[in-house]
Length: 218
Image (tube, rainbow, N blue to C red; front, side, top):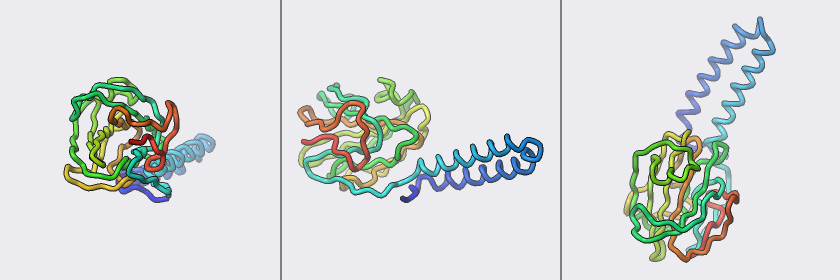
């Protein structure tokens, strides 16, 4: 398992803060209130472990195939429905949304291989990620991929806790399936807008793994 580069600064700062709090607790709290002191130390260490695990990159065997669309992130499938596209596309699309909890791996990956046709950041609100309007009103970054003559859009959407979206792609890039496309800090969701007629391979509330789970075929 590796630690993602987006976490280095956060981890260093968190480690220094945690060390300072632990030292002060040992010197000032433990002599008078040993039980409270130990509870504080364990809580700080637990929080530090959580922060480290948030930026983890687990070793995995990634899926690939020209006819498959793999999950761009870890999480739970929360939406599968037909919608009217509100960005880039003008037609109706099949929306598949994945909710990412703070406990999930937060690396985002390319669902297909192909060319990046569109990459755009949008400022917005920080509604909870499962709110119906989060797809259109929250801070987000949208990317359109073209693969085998077909196009799909992926939205990285910020939530109530996620305050930073990172995306590495720009129009004209040629990318490979399951390689990194970005990162969202501290929980959010990712939407996919697929062509009508795409065969969905997952169900509502199913847990998926980024770069591994096959979401659909076209």
